[in-house]
Image (cartoon, rainbow, N blue to C red; front, side):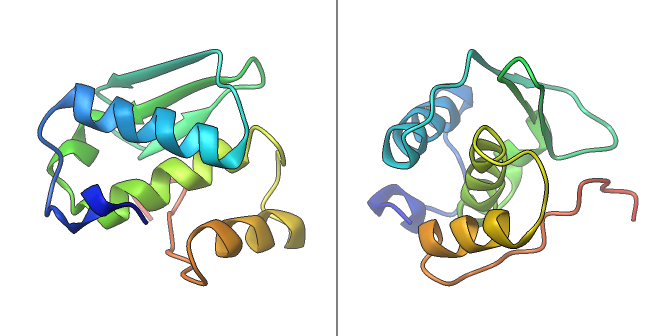
Length: 107
């Protein structure tokens, strides 16, 4: 978590993308591109080409949840599945918090 995570929600897309960049530096990954756009079924996605796409709906969600989604997707740049290594990395970067970031919001 960052000092900015004390805020309830995101100021705007730039605020969100700044958090993505900071987390990427911390996790030591380099996404090819970061997009924030309408997504009806998912909070976010990570392509095999390294393109991260986040739902605009995250901008109105609590900041700590948004950061959990950010970390989740950035870790996918290192580990493509949700196995033990993936969960271990998420836990280590989120100070032991494993937030359920459902791949499909409809579930």
